[in-house]
Image (tube, rainbow, N blue to C red):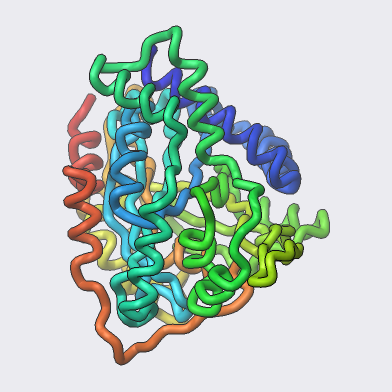
Length: 403
């Protein structure tokens, strides 16, 4: 079974599942579709890709859990690209590092670019967790099984066989969706409260018995238009759009926003053995607009502009506004097509933007001891657990050379 077809079916299945769990997500997708249909200047190929494009987000409690799911994601043609550290990108407590699983071949990206932003908790970071709490978190995480035995067997069989057979494809997709479905079982009230006081994200990861899809993100041609339309519908959005703003030149990198995380009832078991309903704010509806991938040289300029008081003016002052000039100056990745020079789409993520989305949807900032030592090797451990994490710049460079 071609991995692109598996990936397309997985993305569609997860989208249907998430719309059933979070109905407002369905409204977001419908709005995206309505607004995207109005952009008649786009080619059918671009329209098709943007319309079906999604990225999701999942969170894990250990590098072992990520490594287990890396085998599963690989069967869908999704491989780890880039390393992200969210711990110092926001004032709130976000004790996580991450990678993104996505296709790496240009043809596969065009067929279906579904990607998963995959975070992992860092319980060894003393700015957030004591040594005792680290041990408790690791014991809790190591005791759980995120894959059903049937799914684990299917993954091992397909990995050993070099791919997913057609007779196993449907079941593999079904079980993968189940593995990313929110577990409705009761949670330990005291354990969740202890983690939640440090970080709502830590509670979402280590307080649960499994992982789940945290959000699912459609893509739009104009995120400003989408933001205004959702607000006009009475949907509570976060306070800003993350990422480089519109300026005189082509859109660069990635812009993201979301509707605010919803209050969702979860069953908690108290120390007295009594079950109670509590509301948590974890899952939200993100949307994205993707622009042109920038080179390391271009990234330095964009990051410097993003730190200024007037980002638009800084971009206009620092960069030429035409795609050709940007390419000639070595600021962006482009490829030559039958229709002329085209910018290569940015397929990855921005740590500050991801942290900004997470932070805007937290119900409180958590706690962080700035005087305690961080876990400097967290990214290296994630890289080692996955065996090989692709360098996004190398992938864009290769894509720019492909005809």
